[in-house]
Length: 140
Image (cartoon, rainbow, N blue to C red; front, side):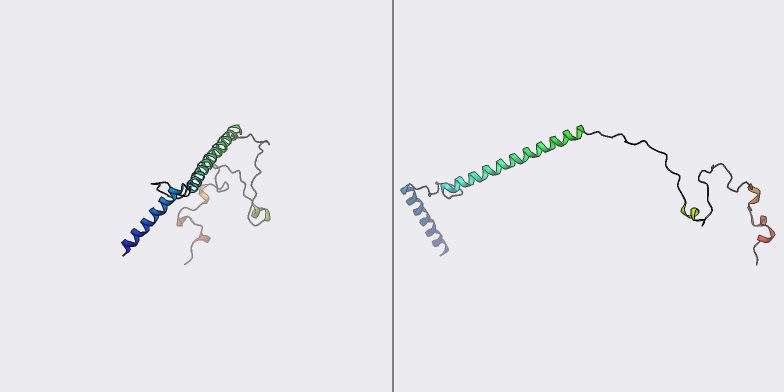
């Protein structure tokens, strides 16, 4: 049943196409055209395709122009500009706790070779438990 309806549709389409060709009308689809449609539709598809191709060419051209201008601007720029002011010595770091009097002021320019014991020498520091003074001995 479905096969007969399909055959009827095909034969009707062929009759309409042959009648249109006999009239010589522009609305008849060209014979063997894969997309079918009228000549006006084919012209419209061609125009849309050409417009799309043209717009892509313009976009690629614009991107090329922008890229070349960016390259020129990069070449013209100074890679490392010289400073406009003379460098000055950095101010010494301040200790806010020492300024407030909470901790003693420690000089920042101490010599690493200088003894840390404030000149007392190594003998003032106990090295073993037996070297402790009598009043500093641990109590039981």
